[in-house]
Image (cartoon, rainbow, N blue to C red; front, side, top):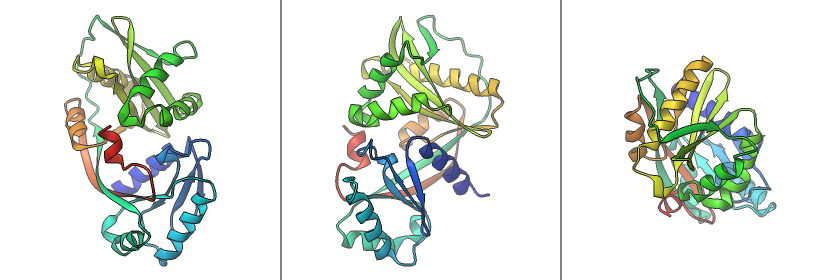
Length: 262
């Protein structure tokens, strides 16, 4: 199985935990009417060129419009979808290309001594609200509108384990492990803006690597949102396995680039 298929399988398993999926002859439709503004939970997924692009586009537009959700597509293998992208333009879809690095941990455990100012604990019912406030404060995640419901659902799902980091006793960073079979994926690694620059992301990464090592999982993956974050993870033993140029087409709302820039 090639790298793209491995990555897609892991990504689909991840998305399946917080939304519904319809398998079609041309790809997938993901939807969650309780979270209409959560892009990952509401989109059509295409990685093979459809035989009838216009029919697929109209099917997706109708499906999402009937549910009052903005129609959007996530596109993979862009080099094979040029005609489909041309058709999307004729329907007035906005479109952006995104460079998506895929990184895998080299399994080296560094001899790292955690700062005395830092403690890390699992997210439980007792500290849930503290973790929620951190998640909702991160503009790159889409803010409260997106993360409030999504975080609650993920917290309840057995495939996710969330952690919260405290600096001098103050809750200021979160991260989670998503587990699927013998694979693990690091997600939602984030620090409140006023606590950035203190090396707290590294503390979380080292901790999660240790947890994966103890669990016996075969691989730990991370999907950084851009090449800048990719360089950060590279400092902590994550090797870039590939870079995929993906597409995001949408009939409304903001682009990913606009969300990440705040």
